[in-house]
Each structure stands twice: as C-alpha cells, then as structure tokens.
Image (cartoon, rainbow over all chains, first blue to last red; front, side, top):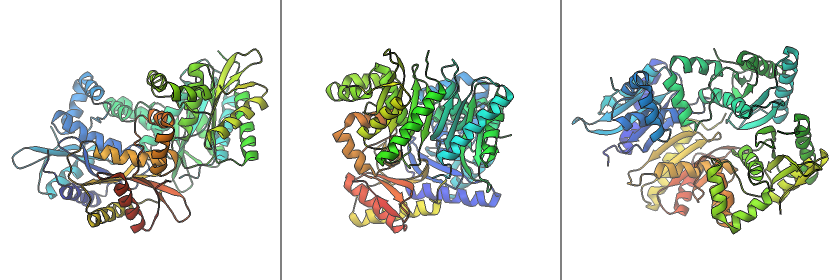
Length: 144
Length: 144
Length: 144
Length: 144
C-alpha cells in the first residue's frame, strides 16, 4: 500500500528534530503514518504533557482522513465546525484538526503518508514536519 | 512513577476542605491524580449533582493532558474550540476544559500530579485546589 | 438518594487499610460509591499498576449495577458470559465482574452504596471491603 | 515522570531489530511506552497487517495496566476470561492480553515503562522485547 519505508520515516523524524533544535523549540513528539493511516514511526522528546503522542498522531490522521494537510482541516473547523465534528465522530475520535499535520507526497503527487508534530506553537510544529519531509527527499503538503 | 504519596494527596484534599469552609463554599468534590493521570485520592461532600466526581477528575486530567493548568485549557476552548474538541475526542471524552484543574509541581518545577475541584464557581474551585496544594508544601500551577 | 456521608465513606476506607495492614496485603486501591453509582471517596496506596483505580471502581459499580455483591457477578460471568458482556456494553465499559465489589447496606437491608477493592488476590480484596464496611457500623453483602 | 529517555527507548527498538534479524523473524512492530502508559518511541518494519501498531502498543499497555508482563495477562485471559474482558472494557479497548508485552524495570525493580512487539509468533515477539531491554542496560519482566 505504501512506498514509505521505515528508513524514510525515521529519517523524517530525525531531520525534524534537527530543525527543531535549530529553531530552539520545546520538546516535540513526531509521528509518521503510512497512506493507510497506520503508525509507521514515532518519537517523543521528554515533556510532561500526557496526550502529546495522541495529538501528534491525531494531526497526521486528520490530514490523511480528508487528503489535505491539517492547515485545511483547521480552517474547515472554524468555517464549518459541524463538518469537522462529524469527521471526528466517524473516525472514532482520532482526529485533531489543527495546524501541524502535513501530507507526504512523491514527486508524482501521490500521497504516501503524513507527519504530525506536537509540542510547540502549531506553526512551529508544521515547520518541523515540512523540514523533515523535504530533508528525506519527499514533497510536503501542509494544506492551505 | 511519582513522588505524590497517598499521605500528601489526602492532605491536599483535607486542606482544600478547610479552605472551602473558610470561604463558605458549596459542597465540593476534590480529586487528586498522579503524573500518569491516574486517580490517587478523592472525596466528595454531600451534593445532589450526579457528575460531580467526573467533572473534578476531568479538570485535573485535562491539565495533565496538555501540561498546563486548566485555566489555559479554558482559554484555548474559547479561542480555538476545535482544538479542545479534538483533545476531548482523542482522550475518549475524559477532559473538562474549565478553570479548577491545577497542576501539582515540586520546587524543581516537575509535575507530579494535578488537583481538580468542582462544586462552586470555577474561580472558587481553583482557590481551593491552590490552597490544598500549597498547604501540603507543594507548588500550584493553575495555568494562565 | 443516600445516607452514605463522606465521613462514613472515609471511615470505610481507613478501616479497610487497617485490615489490609493486619493481613499484610499488597498496596490496595479502595473506592466507595454511593447508591447512584457515583464516586464518594477513594484512596490508592503506592503501586505501579495503571488501571488500579478503574478496577476498584469497576468492581463496586458492577455490584450496584445488578444490586448484588460482585461475587455473584463473577459467577454469572462464568455461567452466562454473554449476559455479563451485555451488561458491560450497556454500562459503557464500566464493569469489572470479579470478586471484591461489596454492597453497603443499612440494618434495614437498604443499599446505600458499594465498596470496590483492588490490588491483592480477589478474596483478600473482598475481605478488606467487608472489614471496612462493618467497622463503619454498616452491613456488607459480598454476593454469593 | 520517568527515567526512560528517548535515547534509551530508541536503543531498545534498534537492539530489538538486531535480535529479530538474528532469529530471521518476520517484519515486526516495536512500541515503547513510558510508565504513564504513553507512547515514547515506535517503529514498524514493512508488513501488510493494518493493526500491527495497535497490537504492539496494546501488549505494552496491558502489561502496565496490571503491573505484570503480558505473559501473566495471557494466562489470566485463559483462566478468568471475564476479568480480562472487564479490563479491556474499562481501558476503552486498549489492551491486547497476549505474550509479547514486557515491563522495563530499573535495577531497583522500579517499572519505568513497557515494550510491546508484534509480527511473529508471540514467543518470538517476547524474545525480541527482552533482548532490546537488556541490551539497553535495563531489566526485562515478561510476566510468568
């Protein structure tokens, strides 16, 4: 179902942490899901917030759920909250519709997975996801 | 996992009730959770509201979920309702994002648990949580 | 709805811990629920198992759910597993159908709550619940 | 909350994969949870089974839920299925009670997390978890 190898997924995470260190961000959780919405790789830096992992996974899952980076989902949640609430219901409560869930695409625009980042401001989380994806030689789609 | 002993948790509750009596508040429920989000001690004064316990626990759990006193969660719920709804979904419906969930920290700023209080006005609930934590010799972080 | 005051609920817990110390049991969690199935008081001694609180509460809740001590529920779960699975479903997954959930009754056989204990062998958990209830001057019904 | 750093969690996973390669096992998923039951690190080798990640996480979570390696939970599920079904219910369906969830302990027997492995025979999954934990200088408790 996917070309997203474990080696690539781990490279995305490692390069994401490099970017985070450059920006001096707070401890982050980075999740990489494959195109089927299943967790492929994950790492969480030391931080006390209990739901950090679930938030990171939920951003990536939301992006895959609608085939759009979660920046689009964040906007939909403001403009049409009932739609996003419906999405959350049918997903069994797995979606976090905020900025920081970025689609991973091939050069041919095929979606092969998504990255979700949580721990700092949403825009910073998103910057880390994009940096990780691009450093792994793939294309990042954060939504618009 | 935690330095929050049962003796400390019970002292927080007892001192919270002392504060509540001083302020002449309504019957309260006070919940103390450890850093893993698990209930450590709980007591509920006589009151007819069925969900009093769940509300107190949900305030404390919400604070631990994001690593911030629930005053911050209350503000987020107003400014970015879709984010807090997402949190509620991924937590399995365990979060009550209102004032009255206060982090318990050590002198070194390490989170060792949270207190949730329910039964009176939110600000009064919070005052009770803070008084209990401080009377037990720990540091209270209600969020900002 | 209940005559189970907080003072009585706390006495049940404290006397339960006295019994546990006499028997040399492992760290326990003791939950006291009122007749409406709502948590009244709770205390958990230091132990690493994450779901200890939920198990103790689930034993007491199960007893109240069928109006029988959880020893009866444990037997039903063996003899008619589909019935107990149905109970768990309609309860929203709140029942733990094993020995250690004991009804609290008045001298007139009125149910005013239930005690759930978790942490040692089920029979020992039950002995602690019974000891706590009786030391508080109430009648204990563990089911048959 | 825990001494289980990200560096240690990743070492457990990497050393687990080394062991798996030595044994010639099928593609595996390895999850490392901290003592609060929260995901710390995860990696999944290429395999088509959709729930591989959830199974690995569920084995580790089950071990932490009862404070025993999941080999004990596996035996309980055979001897007292209604107890383990109750555990699954109150956990919100997060427990997979089979062999392959191994507690991570310090030299002082303190639980700092758990490893869950899924993808091959349960006994092989468990061997990988143990090898990873021990190679990281920690103590493995698979339950009995």
